[in-house]
Image (tube, rainbow, N blue to C red):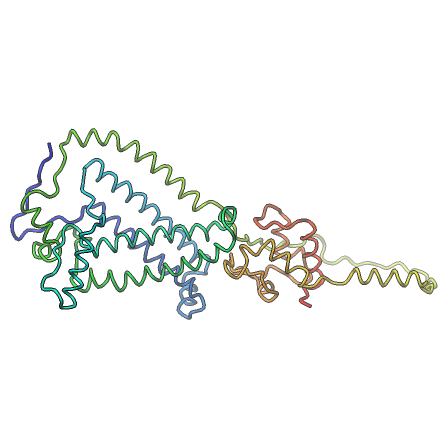
Length: 404
């Protein structure tokens, strides 16, 4: 049989949030702040403020790692939140008051009319107001969009196995736009409603005063005073439901944790910097040339001259126009202007010669010493060149990596 908790005496504080939702809110606050900071810095990378923050952070790679860690923490919070909701709904039979309904539409219209001076009374709110519901579901939608687009940018090769390559830059645009919207919603909407209009400490203290309840949640206060709010199931019923819920929630949690692991460790599409290889052997070996008697040089025959010209034409240095299509076909997905993995862009001659975040990948006149050739020569790269393509690019670098 369900029991009813006693209503607090007049003037006492009313329980609003337990320890679990407050901890979830604190972790999400930290992860969201870090995600917003590190994400917007990458979106507006040329800003002076962004350049300063990147330098303080120790480089863009550290910034991206921090962004990824914060995203992983947020995903873990979401999994815990789902398990927490399931426990309250199935085991404790708590009413899902955060679900929107038609009454919320009516409350929104009443509030709008009151704020415009067309109505005489404010809407009477229950456990959650329509503003709180709207903000909660906006957060759920934002996490879904950010998670989906974040996966597409974090795992571009897995994405293009299912979707066209155009989805990668589209995901980047959607990710950045949703980030701006989320940050503005927190600064403008949440900051005003929770901290400026009336400083609400309940997410930190877990409680509200009677005056605050009367102003923000009068219908819930009336239910508490009437003894019809927060009924707790009988202990025997809770034990029975736990025996069913815990195994199911455990299996679901394991599946979701494996999904997060696949999200984070699915692929490595960035070029790994290879340390420069030092040549071994004697640096200087003196040689004594053996005199060779001069021999008369025969005059070239017409046939020999034609063959020499053909050989010279065949040995003409490779130019950028010949290697650009190879880069576009093999490397454009990860090292195009849209994604620029590790800061390396191979769309144009200038960008290719500039290199990435760890320095140039092409050393003019030295193919074997170029990081690009070192990485491709080991094999297994996501954008692996064929033997013929690698030979062409090596010849281009050995000839001085000429543009024209």
